[in-house]
Image (cartoon, rainbow, N blue to C red; front, side, top):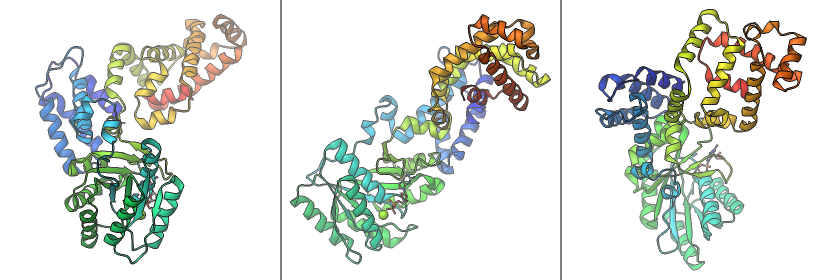
Length: 453
Ligand code: GDP
Ligand code: MG
């Protein structure tokens, strides 16, 4: 896992004052792999790594940071800047700045949606209408120019009805440009603030489709021309984005299907190719599955590393490295892991800010998995476990099998807990011991999951 890999590299880089070719090479290799694993297109990866390198080399390592931490900082800032624009870095997490649609035109403000078939245009038309109605109090008209598939027109009608937007009827066989004219007229006469134009898409890029959408654009002169793209396309997103960017003056991008297991590399590729901001992300088939785009979160998702900088800092501050090393080598050598070790682990976890704060810093996939668990409860339980182990004698900690009924009663009384809790702890310890044998060191995340669950 990348977090572990990077954390290891970071450790080997401690104690140097500057970022150099030598001390960044290994780290940059890991970042490169992470980007490729996240499905960022190769030319984009090359460009990005070159940029990071140029920014990083010669940079002083300030204050208490290690070179590794400094480099992680550069990578995160640079990735956030590339996918969100420079302003995303200085502006912090204020998403509204990046996701605002531009509606500054004579009404109706026209939004044209373009993209391949299946990208999610029709669904997104409904989501955008819902968003505009709920958040901007706009009167919205929708129209479909997908004249090749009657079902596509019916689909938009259904979707519009579900979100309370108006629908301008069109028919298979009509000319898209004629439909567009008529819809704009209708919107003007009926005081619609916004007109959302859904279009046809082909399975692949073809000349006829590009000409049709260019003609539509020329007729409508939309204030927003949004490229809708499926995040699952991964590497192929580059070519699609190129084609649409050449045919149309795009004003923004909507990345759909990010609720799946797409790693989000398409965000970087598309941004790189079009230079246009990603305005929204689609996160579900339902019509409320639309979210503002947060560049920082996306950068983390792509790197798959959560807030690794903070994690690494805390790990170095809170955890006694010698202690951890001793423990790791002991486990490696003997496969043994006693209650004393268990106690050391619990203490280290507490120094790092408890379970909740650790989970916050894990990559999104993990934090989401842990979202249901009550972290305060978990922290309390950890404290009680510590109390129980404190009530044991050193001999008992080293040889838990000594702990029979009368000892259990004594330990429970000492820790102020019922005997069942001592039993539970011994069971958990048993499981953990088995797991530690399998893991042979490391495995902090798995261990945390076992303790939290
Ligand atoms: P179009 O051909 O571009 O109009 O695409 P559609 O809007 O018809 O969507 C194609 C398929 O993708 C449909 O099954 C949608 O439900 C699905 N879809 C669209 N957006 C999302 C999304 O954000 N998440 C998920 N999981 N599915 C989506
Ligand atoms: Mg459609």
